[in-house]
Image (cartoon, rainbow, N blue to C red; front, side, top):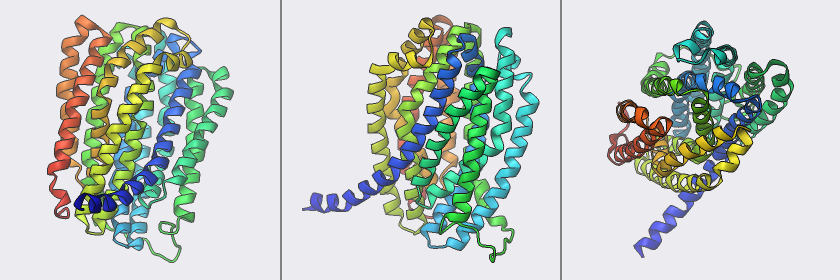
Amino acid sequence: MMNRINWTELKPQIQQVGRLSLPAILTQITTIAMQYIDSAMVGALGANASAAIGLVSSTTWLLSGTIYAVSAGFSVQVAHQIGGNHDKKARDVVRHGIASALVVSAVLCLIGLLISHPLPGWLGGAQEIRRNATLYFMMFAIMLPFSQLNSLMSSFLQCSGDMVTPSILNAVMCVLDVIFNALLIPVFGVMGAGMGTMLACAVISLTGAWFCCVRNPQLRLRRKEKTVFDAKILKTAFKIGVPVAVQEIAMNSAMVAATMLIAPLGSIAIAANSFAVTAEGLCYMPGYGIGSAATTLVGKSYGAGNYKLAKRYGNICIAMGAVLMAITGGLMMIFCPFVFSILTPDPQVRSFAAEVLRIELLAEPFFGASIVAAGALRGTGDTFVPSLLNLGSIWVIRLGLAVLLITPLGLRGMWIAMAIELCIRGLLLLYRQHTSKYYKLPAA
C-alpha cells in the first residue's frame, strides 16, 4: 500500500519534470545543431579551417561560462520569487539582471577583442591556422553582449516556467545560422561562420528580450513600477553567480590548458578533438535540458518553502538525466562514424575522432548525473561546494592524468583522462546532492 501511495505522489512529479525537460532538451538540441552546422560548413573547407576554430573553442567556452554564471546569479532569484508568489520582486530581479549583464558582457567583449590577435600564438597553434583562428574569435567577441542577453532572457523565461518560448527561439536561431552561414562562408571563409552565428544570435536575443520583458505575464516590465536600486539583489546574485563563474572559468581554463597540450600533436589531432567534442554535445544535451528543468522546479519549491519536495524533484531529475545520457551515449557509440561523415570530408580526421570519442562515451551516465545535480543544487542557491568539486575534479584529476598519458598515448590519453574524471565528478556531485544542507534550511 505504501509503494502504491508513493507512486501516486511520484507519478505527477515525474510528469512535471518531463513537461519542463522536453522543451529544455529541444533547446539544447538546437544549440548543438548550430555547432554541427558550423563544424560541417567549415569542415568542408579542410582540416586547417576546422583546426582554426578548434584551437580557440576552449577560450570561447571560457568566456561563455562567465556569461552563464551571470545568468545563473539572477535567474535562480527569479525562480525563488515566483515560487513564493512575489512577481513584483521577480521583475525587480529582471531589471537588475539586465543592467548588470550588459555591463559584464561589454567588458568581456572588449577583453575578447584585445586578445583575439595574440591568442592563437599563446595556444601554440601552427602559423597556417592562426589568422583564421583570430578572425573567428574576433566575431565571437563581438557577439558576446548578444549571447549574454540571449542567455539571460532564456533563463528568466525558463525559471518562470515557460520552457517552450526559448526552445522555439533557439530553433529559429538554428535556421538563421544556416541561412547566414550559407551566405557568408563562401565569401569570408572561417570568419563567415562566426559572422553568421553572431547575426543569428543578435536577432534571437532581441526577440527573446521582447518575449520576456513585454509579453511574459509575470516578468513583463511595467512602466508604472519604479526601478529602485536594491543592493540585496546584487549581493545574492554575487553569492550564487561568483562560485559558478569561478567554476566555469577554472574548468574552461583547464580546457584551454588541455588545448595547449593537444596543439603540438598537429592539425589532424586538433581537428579530431574539436569534432569529437562537437559530436559529444548531442549526447549531453538531455543532461543540460533536464538540468535547466531541475533548477526551475527545485528553485520554485525552495522559494515556496517546500524543501522536501525540492530535493525530491532534484533526485528525479538526476535519475532521468543519467538514464537518458546513458542511452544517447550508447547511440552515439554506434552512429558516430556517420556523424563524422557529415562534419568533415577528411577520412583521417573522421577515424581518429570516432576512436577518441568512443573512449569517453562510457562515462556519459556519470556525466549526466553531475550536470543535473549541479542544476538541482543551483536551484537552492547551493553553488559554492559544487563549484569546488567541479573545478577540483577537472584540474587535479583530468589534467593530472592527461599530463601523464598524453606523451605515451597522444590524443587518446587526453580522452582516457576525461572519461575517468567524468566518472569521479559524477560520484562527487551525487554525494553533494545527498548531503547538501540547503534542502533542510533556507540559505543564510
